[in-house]
Length: 182
Image (cartoon, rainbow, N blue to C red; front, side, top):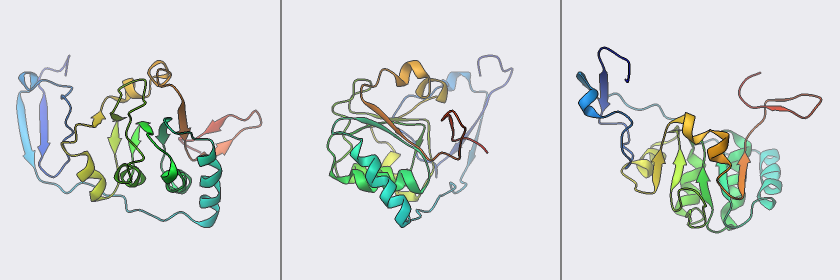
């Protein structure tokens, strides 16, 4: 929007609106297009037995007050289930998923001990069931921000006791993990 000749904004009343300032001021918008397209949903798939066992091992590495990043898939979902006994977890993640809702509703995620954005769940986007979108909508504890900020190593490093939980698609002989593509 900083260099565009014309800026078109699309608004959709069916998309959750986070309680956080927009990245583009409406004074920069030339045209507004209103739509009402249902948002894409990702149904919850219960973790299998192997995922649950791995999730238990992962949960042992997470301590009360840690800040977590949850990826997508059976293992991060299973880890979330295994984290139900933890307290005062924070969230700093790229993607909000269905399993985050369970942790919030159980009072496990509070963000009260986060060192960066205390009391806030920080993410870039959400993809899940309607209950996830309902949790995000107008929630003052949710901050959806640009990926260039949320995923920046210098920003992530400001979170004390940061634990990242992802599914890895491949590992090379030196132990480097790839979680983005095969």
